[in-house]
Length: 246
Ligand SMILES: Nc1ncnc2c1ncn2[C@@H]1O[C@H](COP(=O)(O)OP(=O)(O)OP(=O)(O)O)[C@@H](O)[C@H]1O
Ligand SMILES: [Mg+2]
Image (tube, rainbow, N blue to C red; front, side, top):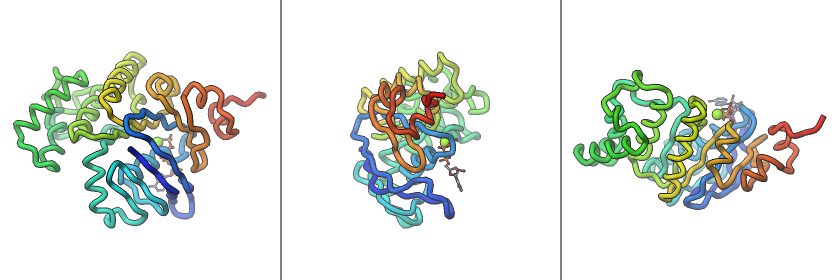
């Protein structure tokens, strides 16, 4: 469950997120779309406790984040890292570690899982994302799409209830996008809550039961993709989707 109340985020004098409130119930699969530079990445980074914010409150399951320095949210950050995973646009795998070691790292270091148990789980996860044949490969020897699969396995290793993804299709060809949709659908079926930032409206429509259009610091449309992405009412949403006549 994600609950955002009155979230405000500024960079210097510029307000990127303005008094934003929304909820995502457990198990929902949501796309976050909107103009480039509008603040989508900033928003999910705030939700994952990677970025401090200026006003409002964020709840992820039992953890509550408050405005101000991230250091002041020590306990909440710890709790959020345990329930929420994050897949970065550039994956950010540990470059000096194999795929397997990448996936084992957080369970061993953060959860103090015994290595043998973490390894068995990591192998199973890499298998699940279709990377079972490359467990010993170093990240530089993997394609973009393969690195992304490892990054997803790494996020899943902490057994999150919520997964944030930033532009997960940006490095993938259409067939790989289809594979990703299948994988994420499977995870959603298992109960994972998904919030994905994407420019790919087709991907959003295929995967998600709900789409949010984020523009000028606000969610200006919220509903089923078929409606939000094809026939939104808000002029900012229509402009973003280039639906205006003339
Ligand atoms: N650390 C930072 N300091 C100052 N401004 C920043 C910082 N990070 C992002 N911004 C600005 O905040 C705005 C929102 O950026 P953000 O990356 O969240 O947009 P986005 O919607 O994810 O865009 P895109 O679709 O291009 O990825 C942009 O104008 C960006 O330049
Ligand atoms: Mg972004």
